[in-house]
Length: 259
Ligand SMILES: NC(=O)c1ccc[n+]([C@@H]2O[C@H](COP(=O)([O-])OP(=O)(O)OC[C@H]3O[C@@H](n4cnc5c(N)ncnc54)[C@H](O)[C@@H]3O)[C@@H](O)[C@H]2O)c1
Image (cartoon, rainbow, N blue to C red; front, side, top):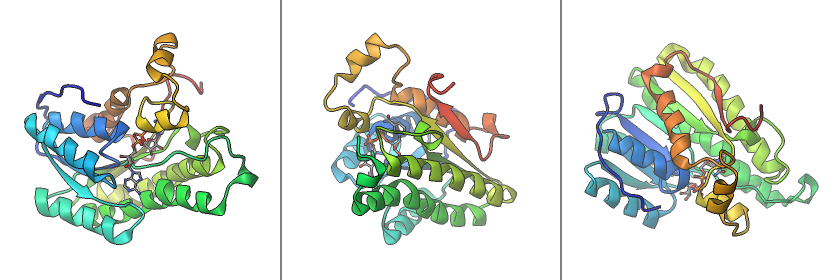
């Protein structure tokens, strides 16, 4: 996405440091732009170096402050480094958005899933969220607090036949992890919540819809598919003081689809 971006400093973000996994594409890219243009310092964490570095250039050329930290969230050393490097370069870690994820094996029923696919999907979408939290929390506990948002999905709350059992189980797992850690770390002035988007117009959705014209679908069915920017406004709220009593919550962002 190469939409024009513009700085507009806001109190809730000014001087704050946020780390965004999967920060180079889709929802993460929109979050990087939103937070950096509001005045936060953003560590873009992603496995995709080209996209990450390009986004840093766009942000910094528009008056924002971002760095790129190449990270595979399935690797412990990388994740330990992503927190250390954020703190080294920006001096703090106030907010963490654990958002990196991959799609499931579309249309493959549970018994047909290869063990390798089950392992890969769970490893990126669930175990890596725990791994990121492990290192973020260690820093936040010592530094007196913080806020974490994890990306789940509507597939974290109900069946997801198209995306498949591994994706659905991984996103259910993110909610259990979020709820338990929220209670464990509440006394440390740390809030932890999850978001549960429905369909969002990102490269991930493009890959799962076999080349369908998503813009045309959005035009014909208003509200069916969100923009990444729509999702990020809820993320902004969860990081802000306006949501100070929201903790251990899985916030549904599906325009009433599951109502
Ligand atoms: N797009 C949707 O319809 C939708 C709906 C609900 C939930 N989600 C979730 O939102 C999150 C973001 O998805 P998106 O739609 O923006 O997808 P996307 O593919 O546009 O972005 C995902 C990013 O994660 C990065 N990534 C993947 N594996 C990684 C790894 N091992 N280490 C580091 N980075 C890695 C990718 O390089 C990419 O930049 C995912 O967790 C996804 O499951 C998406």
